[in-house]
Amino acid sequence: MDQIVEYFPIFLLIFCRMTSFFVVAPLYNMRGVPSTFKIGLGFFLSLIVFMTYGLKEKTVPMDAEYILYIFREVLIGLLMGYIVYLFMTVVQTAGALMDMQIGFAMSNVIDPMTGVSAPLLGNFKYMLLIMVFLAVNGHHYLLTGLMDSYKWMPLSNELFSRIYDGSITDFLSRAVGNAFLLAMQVAAPLVIAMFLTDVGLGFLAKTAPQYNVFVIGIPLKLLLGLGLLILVLPGISAIFERLFAIMFDNLEQLFGIVQQTESK
Image (tube, rainbow, N blue to C red):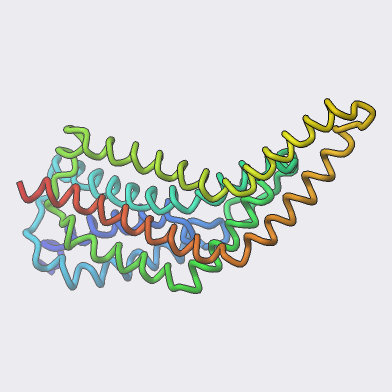
């Protein structure tokens, strides 16, 4: 009983990091995933991590400073989940850019996984992304990375110091910028093709004013956009795999930032 009381604060800190990650991380934060499953998965993963790493940690007294420890662990879990979520939403952003060019901007649909309105092509690509992610066992790699985070960021980490010196803020700013740049690159073939189509329709309006470009342009852009989308789909799995590699690389960079602080 004394050992349970002694190590319970450590287990609680591990449990806070695990559950906060599942709140934000895609695939685990879907509306169809029961909350009991998330709590149970977080509990058993916390138990495994506690038996592996937690018993090596020094005991943490449950005093006023313990609240800061809980807040720090929750913040680490949310940061890790946010990085994963950020790069998963790249395809939705790219789909929104494609929808604006093709003419689907007003035809948003309800995403059954999150329950919010999503662009038509973005939702379609996001479902493909989830399927590829499950096919390459990405959810297993996420769990492995979450459990191995204690090798890089143990319970005695100094995350608050990194936030104070601006390293975390700089990293998040660059991650958001890289995610938007990736979305532009994914949507670039179709966006550029639609731009050239608009240029061609502009020349047509000047050379042959008798043609109504508004009547011609809408179905033309729709057919061209869907045709280009069919041509791009065979290579989209390679794009997704590259996106996953960038996502895990950014997670590793986050671990390295906090580890560098601790090494000092």
